[in-house]
Length: 358
Ligand code: SAH
Image (cartoon, rainbow, N blue to C red; front, side, top):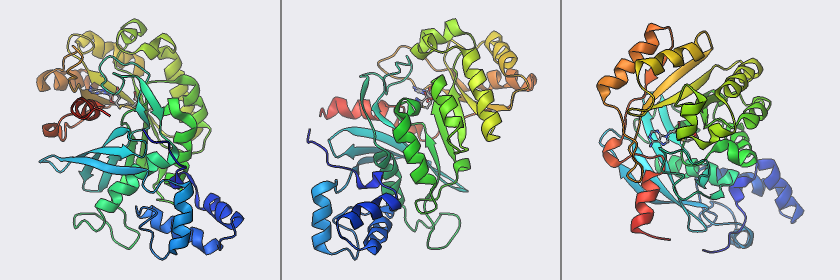
């Protein structure tokens, strides 16, 4: 592992201006550098910036904080990415193509310390947090690869491929709170990628105090909580975080999020065979959520080879959704996309590291 320099992409335009002018550079250089950086250029590639200034920048900042290690192309258009960080760590991401634009799933940590039993991201614990700029750079790199794709909706020179972002890659976003909020500000900034908060979803396993903090940040994104169980005792079996925060506390934090932001919230419920998908579970879930301004996303488990938990078949997944709908709970079964190139949720990275140890 090499020691890391600073990350240029951590800075807002104003912060970059301040840094450069303090060093005696002209203010317009900041806008020039920032524009190049937003279009995914490395420092070496920055257009119109004098070589002397590039060299000066390279003494302080990483040339390419995130680079593409490998892409897996699915037959349905989905792309799964392995990215390499400048210290050699590997993270993963997914690009999903929809009619309205592209949705990118980003990672917020290398590994994870939450220990969910169905998840591969947590197999080796938390390695480190990503900085705001490392999270942002995952999108900058993918945008650059898809610049000018013929199937992109919309037009204009500001057109960028990634219009929607989900924080559902490896890591627990609320366990890396400050960097994640900084990333969200950079991402939604008019001077940055200008992605609307409404097009951003943040998924958490339910770190309750940070759910309250997030409600006060004035970033009205879609808050999604990974529930996966209807009773605390069951949830504790698959999610260690349930030992710390109860389902009742999570629901209170969601209510507060709705009151503060006006945004309805979402629950993820991964269907695990023999664990959480009987009719009794559907009824219990409906009872918990009845009348709340929320929506349930049902997920089929991506089986992780290091784990014993099993997925349910399509028939049982639709049956579970039917039970919820019958009781007036709005639910969708998440389409399984790109499964021909393996799951994500840390499985890509785990498989890759097995073959290519760091
Ligand atoms: N730490 C955040 C984001 C993680 S990943 C969270 O817990 O929400 C996004 C979703 O994928 C979560 O709902 C997570 O529980 C789910 N997930 C993780 N591993 C999975 C697997 N093997 N199969 C299906 N869903 C999985």
